[in-house]
Image 1 (tube, helix red, strand yellow):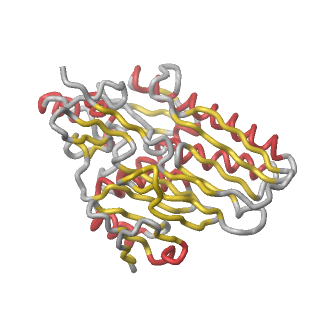
Image 2 (cartoon, helix red, strand yellow):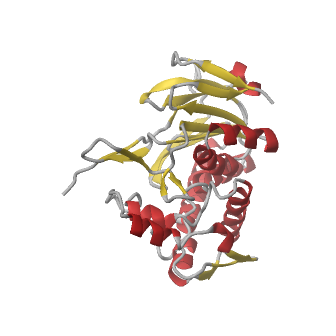
Amino acid sequence: MKKYRYFCAAAMIALTASCSTAPATESTRELFAMDTIISIRAYGQHSDEAVNAAADRLTELEKLFSVTDENSDIGRLNKFGTANVSDDTAYVISEALDVCGSTDGSLDITVYPVLREWGFTTGDMHVPSDEAITAALAKTGYENIGVSGNTVTLPEGYMLDLGSCAKGYAGDEMLAEMSRLGMTSALVNLGGNVQTLGTKPDGSEWSVGIANPFSPNELLGILQIHDKSVITSGGYQRYFTDDDGNVYIHILDPATGRPADSGLVSVTVIGDRGIMCDSLSTALFVMGKERAVNYWREKGGFDLILVADDGTIYITESIGESFRNSSGFPMVIIDE
């Protein structure tokens, strides 16, 4: 029996957001949800209430989106093929389908049967047979999902997984809860997905460290942001290696049912909405540099940090001055 090595980077984006003097109104909370460690930080009056409200909202959303809980919206949908889902679930599916369409299927939220064949969802990582991949691919295709209001219908054998966008949406909602309670300075880190509200309490930018995909415990560089989400997808986050030294990453190309081989090793998307950044980071990784850059030029509304397999960093011009490269890799500015 072959033995495989499995690695999961718990924090693909390292956060450096401390202030020189923490105010008395700072509140923090850490919990485990959505299969990762979540940290919440808020500053201001009622900050304790704010971080607890954010945590409660996260718990609520996890119960709706979990693909392993047969009582969740997604669990019921996958079990019965049709379900009347919550407003949250209907919204996330709709937003994800928009990205599936705009990226020509580079994101496909129906790829779950193929992920299961590879064992990425079960922990039994292995290379499936060509026949198994072909059979699983026959049960995918985002364009075949039926959505009418809050009723979602899948063809027989299809299964949905919102893992490519659920954390981004959860971060959006957690910040919205804290804003509703009067917070103007807050941050959530969902296993490396960093999303911010306002600036730090002293008015300075948040400093978000981007992981070096070739050495994830080190930094590629530090990005200065405020009121933004910074979300990365990379092959280093979850993969296995077979006895011959072949590496298989968890990001699959929906067109082939096999690990994406696009020439990129990480994609970071920076934007106003976490759900958009989360969805695009996966899709653009699959698309590769040229298509990702063309998509950015055509659609706009977000920024990019791409790392190619030769170590070159490509960064959109509007954030070029906000990023401090600490890796020693060459950096190329992408202009419009």
